[in-house]
Image 1: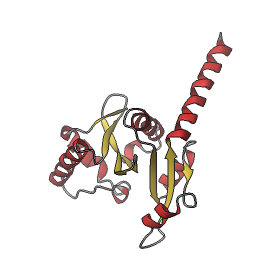
Image 2: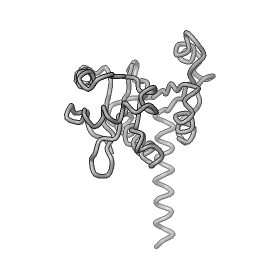
Image 3: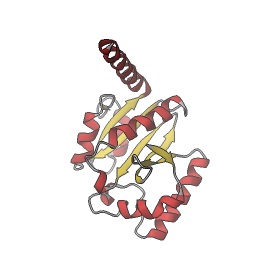
Image 4: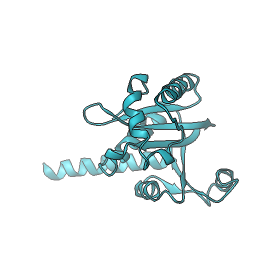
Length: 185
């Protein structure tokens, strides 16, 4: 589902990123293939320096279909940035990619909280965030961060995924799976 970023995936990812329904919502925009390769190399180097965490989302056959990133890491927290290519919208890739990424962040990389800054006009992303059982709307619970992301205009909603809420969700999933197995036996 996820792999470390690789410059060799640039052609496929650039083609997917430039779709008009994807491009406006990508944080690291590139207007040419060469610029995308440059940005990808910078991303890989920034991860080596511990400034961000970036993964390529792949489909069942290992084909690149988007990226998922943790930016602005500070005090074991950061901001999520993710996008999927248009052909993969609504196909069930978003939630499993996030779960795999959060497992790595929380249990391997010592991240404690992930924030999602979502434009209030980005209906697709808002609905996706609201479907996540471990994400909470944090406009009121994190007022200083909410004010910071809306410094110039009231354009964003803030969601938070804490390690504790995600762990509780994972424990429930494991318990439900165990209950299902017991009922089958």
